Image 1 (cartoon, rainbow, N blue to C red):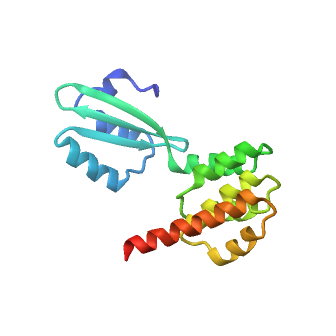
Image 2 (cartoon, one colour; image 1 turned 90 degrees about the vertical axis):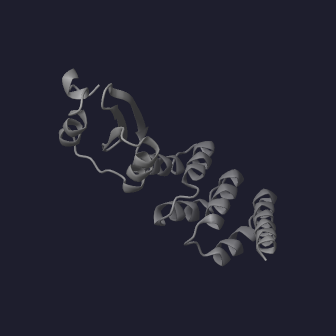
Image 3 (cartoon, rainbow, N blue to C red; image 1 turned 45 degrees about the vertical axis):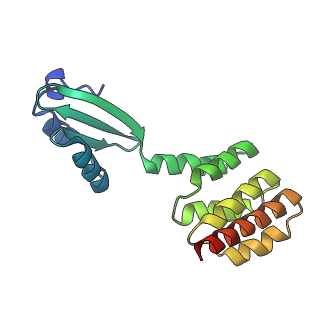
Length: 171
């Protein structure tokens, strides 16, 4: 696991031992959700550079479970690397992974890929930009509506229709 003695991973002091054994940042929202869902069962969230690990403890059973998952920053870095991959499918996948991620990095990657030689990549870039809260939609529309690929132009029109439909339903 992490090379700590087994006795440190079991029992009532396990949470303390894990908190001091590695640098960690606990997510407050996650802590609150776990407290609500798990009651008196204790837990420790340890975040490393590449992954996070959640340890769940019971006062009478020791470690009940342990879950590993990639940290959001790692996911962002991986997705950004995919957007720079020479393979068009990888670039599309990178943009798909960046969908819904706030910030300048995903938006800038999509703006750059609006001029990609592959229509599928440009289409996915249009989707990301259209849904990004900081995007200049009018500029993107001007570029995408004059795209040489009917696929990209149709994607723009579909997104605009969807947006108008959503606005009508809200009224």
